[in-house]
Image (cartoon, rainbow, N blue to C red; front, side, top):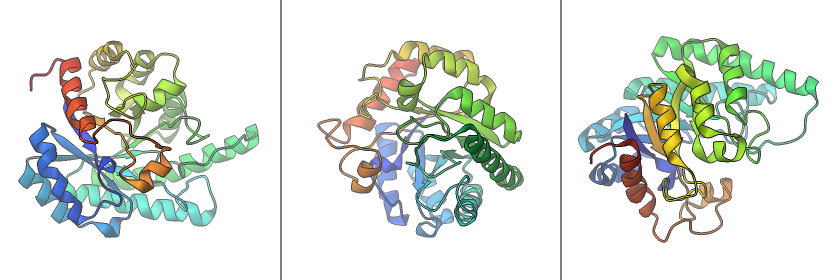
Amino acid sequence: MRFGLNTFLYASPFTNESVSMFKKLKKWGFDTVEIAIEDPSHVDPAFLKAAAAKAGLAIGSICAAMGPGRDFRGSAADQKNAQKYLTALVDQAAAMGCPRIIGPLYSVVGLIGSHDDKTKAKHFKLVVKNLKQLAKHAEKKGVLLCVEPLNRFETDFLNTCDQGLRLVKAVNSPAVKLHLDTFHMNIEEKNQAAAILKAGKHLGHFHACGTDRGVPGGDSLDWKPIVAALKKIGYKQDVVIESFTTDVKVIARAAAIWRKMEPNRDDIPVKGLKNMHRLFGRAK
């Protein structure tokens, strides 16, 4: 099992120049980096791959930024934009030797509302249709698509592990897996460990986040059963710290971060990684 950090903590948008953070991530003890690519034109895959290798990091995942105009359940134009964007990310992941694209790959973040059953069924059908198309391309490229349920304040489409599994099974592709996040699960799941056990073999990615988006393991969450559940299902993929601060204004606004979560931004990765090593029983 490897431990990584999402780059949104330090950069938005991530560009070629942002690789300057790789050296300190390795120094702190991270194995992987999760790169949030808001616009594929901002980065050169070959350059990122070389920079990560030089720093001694693996590019473990690409985090999709599902902003306005990227929506598999939206207008025809939005669906086309989302398909074009995510296809480009798959191609970039393959070029970087990155095994997975992660995040809410189904819809624009922030779209919430009460829909009748007919509209919900229509949305689900559209997302399945579009993900099937994307999955065929991902299969050819050897890249996984890991769909992430978000909490009710960020999406009305996919909130729970059960809903995520329903979508994964409907797409029915070896390239489509589930992505779970402790921050969202803390809001939506009755029992996080039970959700992880239910996900089982379908779990392809995992975010370790503090309940307040601060230091994971320094929060109110009971981490022991979560770690035990991950070990029980034989999860051996990356565990990535994804936290946000007021320092990166665009992401702070999107994630509703209005105050400092920790005294120092670096406390999140440094203390968080130390906690993950302790909780998972891994030596430094």
